[in-house]
Length: 465
Image (cartoon, rainbow, N blue to C red; front, side, top):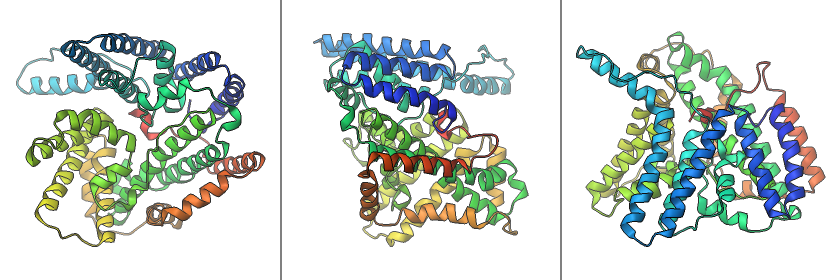
């Protein structure tokens, strides 16, 4: 069930008023949201609802045992087992086929057959986000930052439909305390929510999907048919596409949650204005970046054991960030590229105080991110090689239409504008009366819907992660 579809509109048209009607009755409100969230997830495949329930119950059992124990070694053992089991679920569903294929290829190369059974394992939508939410819960309980809630509250946290399949990654310590406070529908920030939903719709349908149809998909499907200008445009266009697709989803997720009285953390902050790759990752998929920092980089040792160890920890963290996206060598290369660049930034910062002009740094970082789209978007080495060759192939520009150029470079340029005036405009819109906001949202939906092709709205890119 995708947000900008008739099916979701009908679903939400029922869920939202029912949620508002039940807000003052916390038990019934939470039970209703839990039921709605499981129904939302079951529309993809009802069998995965049982997996979701098993992950929830398993982590709840471990968290209760961790919280009840005063033995530090026992608590550490329990949290490690819980995290390993969570990662095992992720590994079976997301990485099993990849590892079996690689092992089979290696063994065939030395004349041995594949020792592992080849199974067709369906990938549950959003399994990476579900796993990360579960891990953040048990780890925060182990760190004494959180007490285990009721099973209903935990189930709602892990399954809450706005963030269930593609984030943002909301920490248990951010979400669960909100379930203890009575909600009041009259206090819902309708204006801010409507602004976010409208902006998310525009990003997804009027920018990301248009760039995909007009530039990205043609070039990434048959790169041999295009020369350097078109391939280069496609790389920048894909960087903008994935930004608008993913930030559009999270804008809608945050807005929908806000309409239901719950607050999510920000997930993007104008990443195309960054002057270093480290800054880029502080602005891009913010909730993933802080998860990797707090649950991977710091546990590995962070920067506490000297610059050399910090560089290794940083590189491993970014490698895992790449692998998190999926079981392909392209994602491994993507993570290694980003890790190597960020380590290089650290070394350069330690050896010299010279910095290039800010705009030069921004151009370099945006260009590097666009180049890293080659392994990220390419399903195999052959396509990636063809794209690299295309970058170096002279020829005419056939895809540089006004629409493609305006959308691609307009989004990048918009990130260079001052933030204060944009915030003021959003605040002004958010304070409009509800009828005006509703009318504005309806007009926005109709205008954006006019750009939807006959085959409908493509799935969000991050649904596959």
